[in-house]
Image (cartoon, rainbow, N blue to C red; front, side):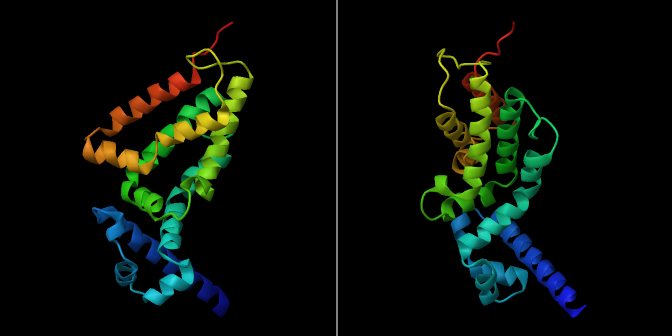
Length: 206
């Protein structure tokens, strides 16, 4: 009983820290401006507790991000169409990118904090590799089946095309468009959908 209570308390404390960090990133004009001291104070824990549980600031940001994006990842991994694995590639690829863009818009500063805090190449991060792998496989299925070949008439490489499509949802670009250029959410989604459609190419009818 005591061990179960300790685990429940630890889980509750972890969620308190994640929620406090999430709020601070959302209110901050710059993700770099949020310190571990501020997060610890907002969560009501010692800074040492944060380092023991999350390793460093990057580990904490990653934990917050993963907690918030987990429902979307579950929908992609196990859910119904258009996000889930049973959907046809031509339906699923636009749906995946639209969902990812909406997540970045809903969590602009958190997503930006993760990109800014990463050490080494962002393209080697686990969360990026996960999305890239799904998109690459969908594109290779689509083009391998001869359903579309892009506007140039020759099927592009699925690996490279997946990188290009994900680049359109990068948090720094989303922040620039939404925060700097004042592009509305619906316009950004429409622009992304049009771009994805051009990359996928025209659907063949027989």
